[in-house]
Image 1 (cartoon, rainbow, N blue to C red):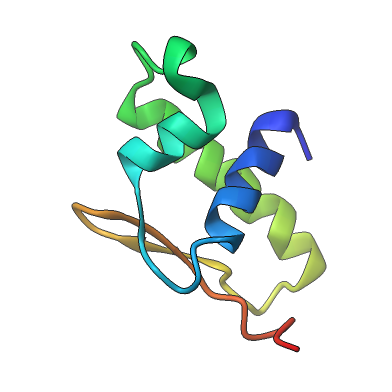
Image 2: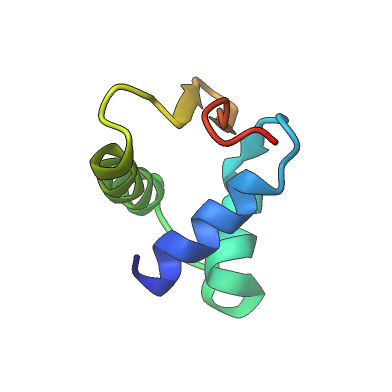
Length: 81
C-alpha cells in the first residue's frame, strides 16, 4: 500500500462501523496543512485504488461501501475476532 492508502485504511478501520465523512478522510490522510485543495476526485481515486488492493486479498468481499453524500463505511466481516 502507498502511504495515503495505508492512512485511509487505518482511518476506515478505526471508525468502529461508523461512516467516515470525506472531510475526516482529508484530515486523516493529508493532514490539516495539505488538506487545502484536495478534491472530491482525489478522494474517490484514493478509495478506488485501496479497493483494488483489497480485492486482491478477498475478491468477493467489498470492504469499502460508499454512502452517497456522506462518506465511506468499512465493512470488516471477514476479519472479525
